Each structure stands twice: as structure tokens, then as C-alpha cells.
Amino acid sequence: MIMLFMNIWLGSALFAMTIAIDSPILQQKECLEANEGIFFSVKKIDIPRHKNTYNPSIVASKGGYTLFFRYDEKEEHFFHEKKFGGCTYIGYCQLSKELEVISKPRFLDLKSSYAEDPRAVSYGGKIYVFYNDIDFQDSLKRKMKLAVLDEESLKVETLYFIPGGKRRVEKNWTPIVFDEGEKQRLGFIYSFDDLSLFTIDFIDQKIVVEPYGTEKMGGNYPFAWLKKYGFLRGGAPVFYADDRFWAFFHSYFKIKTPVNNYEDRKSFFYVGGLVTFAVKPSLHFDKISRFPLLYEGAFSTKRVRCFDKMVIYPSGCVYDKETRLVLLAVGENDSGIKLLKADLDSLKNSMEKVNP
Image (tube, rainbow, N blue to C red; front, side, top):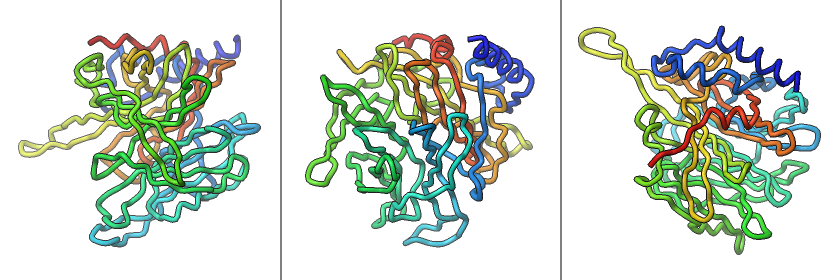
């Protein structure tokens, strides 16, 4: 406990000294003060021989963790009618308990050079990686897919297309594993706009998706957050604690800075937050972060793409029930990976009730 207190104190001091954000919305005194002490450890992860990996996901493994990540390889080309700036792959490596990279990076055999944004969960002795991929019949569309991995070898056993999409470009679905009676169910939050939860079953080598519950926007929805920071969008896989489901999400907003009398410079900010919700007796929001979640050195990763964006993108999460510690994996500025540690009670104290 003493070490935990010292880590939190040191993290707070460093946070206060080093954070530098361009957005006046995030520079509010209340926002900065609310974030002090939440994340007591921040570690940047560099993948050997693969610079600028981002949008990570993480699961616990024997002796440490397995980290999944997106890697872009610049190679301008056309596929059907669309021009691409490069190819995108999903890789992984092993981390020690101290979050050091202890294996060579490898790439999942997903039969594609356009796979993006992994979200990984452990379920039933396997690892399930949700990701989005190009529609090979129409290069302007993207679909959600699911790779089932052997837990030991991490080899891809089966690839599935996940039905149920409603948009031309599908991404940001949020995986969830939850108890239903004596068994566990695998599913996903399709959208936080109406908090729509779907379950996944595997029948005859295909995925069957069924609606489990929906809370329509207009009821117990966090409109106060929406007005300041934008709609809630998908993020890290959901975890369960204190009789509630917890989900790190992202939102984005833009600010305009006048350049001259005729034009403005637009800057986009992608920020992370945390929301809790219940599934039974009905699906509904419970609490949400009072402010976007920030940490020491937030947004400091050098941008190598998307230069008009400042990005914190929560995309992976491991919760330890015994220690009540949360390990959050974030992509920063579409160019890097950081792993953040927080105590669940610190996160809880940074939240407020969602009011209708």
C-alpha cells in the first residue's frame, strides 16, 4: 500500500508538471485536477523493428500479457476504385508482468493486408480478436470480423465474418463477456448511441448474432458528456466489477483556430472516458467520467500520420479482481502505444451519476 501511495503521489506530481494540451476544453483547472492520481503508472511500449504501432489490445497470459497491435506499412496502391496509402496488419508480442517486451513480434494470419484495430478477449479457453477489414467486393466498405486463436500457440484457428452491421464502414464494436446463469456469453456493444448489446453463437461454422437488449437514446443517456466532448464510441473490451459493467470508450470533438479573415484551422481531439452500465434487470447507463481521462504525457507521442488529430484511444483492458487494478492500453496520436495502470476506486471516484 505504501508503494501504491508513493506511485500515485509521484504520478500526480509529474502529471501536474508535464501535461500540455492545446485544447482549452481539456485545459480547464477542474479537468486537470480531476485527473490527478488516477493513472499512477504510464509506460510507452516500443515494438522491436516495427515503429509507430498503435491501437493496442491486451489479454492476460501465463507469466504476463499478450499485446495485440495495429501496424501500418506505407505502400500507395489502388484496390478496386479506392486508393490506399498503405497496408495494415495486426501483430502481437508477449509482455512480462513488468510490461517489458519479451518476444519477437509476429503477425496474425488473417488472409488480408487491410486488417485494422484489434480488440481481444479471453473466452472459453480461446482468445477472440475482433477487428475490421475491407469488403473485398467493395473497397469503400469495411466489415467486422472475428479471429479465434489457440490460447497457447496464438495461431489463428478460424476466421468469421460478424453479421449485423448497419453502416458502410463498420468499426468500434466493443467486445463483452458476461455471465448468463451458469454459463458465459460472448457478445458486443454495437453502439453506445442506444446501448445495443448483441450475443454471438457459433452454429454450423457460422456466427449467429442475436439482440440481447437495447436502451434507446433519450432515456438515461449521458447528454452532458455528448454536448462537451461528442458521442460515445467504442473502445476497450468491457470488464465486470462491483455488480456493474465497465467500458472505456472514446469521443471526438473539434476546435477551430482562425488563421486569417477567410479560413480557420481545424483540430480534432479524440479523448477517452469510462462508463458503467447494468444489463439486468434492464440495460441502462449508470455512471460516466466527469471529464476525459488524461495522464502524464498525454498526447505527447510524435505524430507520423493524421497531423490534424490529437488522439487518446482506449482499446485494450485487463482487470485484476484480487488487486482491483486496471491495466488500460491506449493508442496515442495514431502513432504509439501506452499502457496505463489505475486503481479501480480512483477511477470510480472520477465518475458521476448519469442523469436522465
